[in-house]
Image (spheres, rainbow, N blue to C red):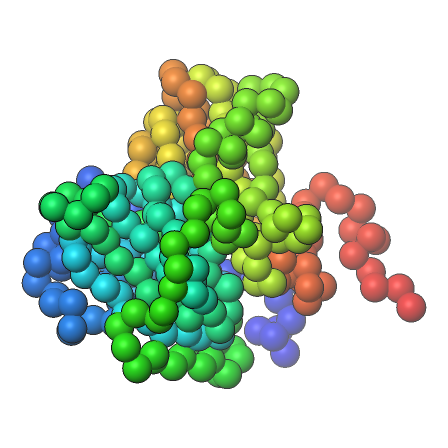
Length: 305
Ligand code: 1HN
């Protein structure tokens, strides 16, 4: 009974940082080792040492780095899981989502809604906009939920690519161009600002997962927050550190870190401007009635009939 009714949230995952410069060589090595036909998706899973098993980056969120080599196709499939992708590096990457192909530009965010056919590719040297380098992005998926709800479906399309037409970034609801996000952040007052990625109708990008971008001016800090949501953060630009519970994580551009539920967290920028990308499980927690944040009136969490 006590185990089922703890006094406080008790996530198993721990605050943890994956250094881009430390893990990128393994991903690039996998690009040469694991052939296109051997892997449906070539991903370096960011497995939290607190659980030591995929798909847990936090207890409710999966994060991983995905790599596509020039002229490759990560073949078309569709699944119940939702995905949000932050493009880290590489020119000439593209993703086709349910019949519409869009460019994957560094710093843009792209969404793959549930049950949409999707395949990813990358143009090679000699193709317009392509070169010999891989494209690399950060995937965020709601995969841990399907451990509790074992109802996940994944099907393969019978060809590598689902038929798709090219669509401009401005005409696609699944792309969030960085230039627009940067402008919105610049328009916010104060040394710390956060702007959410939202659908045109104002809804969160996913039923399970939401995302936002944050700006911290040089030497600024974010407000300290303790909430039942967990998050994955990625450093778009700058250096600094975060205090998460009892842990301090120092970060720089390209790094990714996990913030488990109910660990008080706060970010501190170094001597230059910082941009952070974050995805979190707040939409799911709110839908289920599990969202709670320290400092709010606890009586407001009573579901009074
Ligand atoms: C998946 O389907 C994708 O569709 C990315 O790009 C990462 C990690 C584990 C299982 C399925 C994708 C994934 C994945």
